[in-house]
Figure (tube, rainbow, N blue to C red):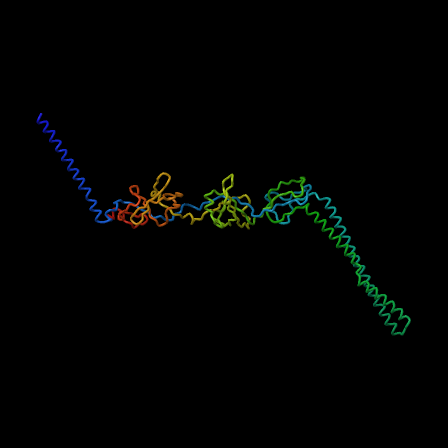
Length: 416
C-alpha cells in the first residue's frame, strides 16, 4: 500500500512540473513582441501577401440604345371647305403627291353651269369690245381723212380767190375738226371695256366658287388617314386626310427612368437604321418629358432630323443611341476585389501601406470587371487577392504587395 501511494505522488509531481514548464515557455514567448514593437513601426506591419489592381476606365459594352418610331415632322390636315357628294378620289393612303395635285372632287354641276355662263358672258364682252374698238378706229380714221380733205380744199380755193366757196369749206372744216376732237376726247370703247372687266370678275368669282368642290394638295408629301369613297356625302369642315411632309422627320421613343438619365441634357443623339447599321446620323433632341406617362410609367423622347432623300418613311423604326462609345468607358474594378456585407458592397483600397474599407456602388458587369458608380476614382488601387484576412486601417508590408496593374512588379517569391 505504501508503494502504491508513493508512485501516485510521483506522477502528480511530474505533472505539476510539466505545467510549470509550459507556463514559463508561454510567458517567455509573449514578452518578445513587445520588444520588437519598440524597435520600429515597420516590424509591426502585418506580414500578409496581397495583390492589388488599379481602377481604370474600361468599356462596359456598345452604346446603349432605344427603338424609336419615325413620323413626319410636319403634318397638314386637309379640310373640306364645302360639302356634297364625292364624285372622285384621286389620291390614296401612302401615296406621294405634289403641291396642287387634285385629291378629291365633289358634285359641282350647279357651280359648273354658273361658271360656263360667266365664261360665255366674258367671251361676248370681249367680242363686243373688239368690235367697238374697230368701229372707233374706223370712225376716227374717217374724221381724220375728212379734216385733211377739207384743209386741202380750203387751200385750193384760197389760191383761186373763191371767197364764197372758201367760207363754206372753212365752216365744214371746223365742224370736222370738232368731230375729230370729240372722238379723241371720249373713247367710245370705254363702256365696252367696263363690260369686259365686269364679266371677267364674274368669271373669277365663279371659279372661286368651284374651289371648294375640288380639294388640292397644299404641299408635297404623303397622304394618310384617308377614308373617303366615291358616292359618300361629306359635310363642310370635315377632314379628308392628313398630308405628311417627310423632308424632315421626328423620332419618337418611350424611355424608362434609367434611360432618361442617360439622355440627360444632351442636345443631339445618333441613330441608325436596321438596313444600314454602320451609317450613323444625327438627330436633335426637341423634347424630353420629365414626367412619366401615368399608365406606362415611361418618359417621352422626341428627336428631329433631316430626311431630304425621303429614305425614311412614316412608321419605320430606327435605333437611337442614348450613349456614345466614349461614355461606355467607365471606372471598373476586378470582380474578385468586391466583398459583400448583406446588400452592401465594399473593397479594400490601398492608401500608402494602409488598407481602407471603401463602400462602393456597383453597376454593370462585363467579363471579369464590374462598373463602379461611386466610391472610387480612376487611379485608386484596390486589393484583389488576400483581402479576406484584412481589416480596415490595417498596415501592410509593401514588399509583399504585388501590383497586377504593372507587368514589371516582382512576385512575392522574387521579393523575398
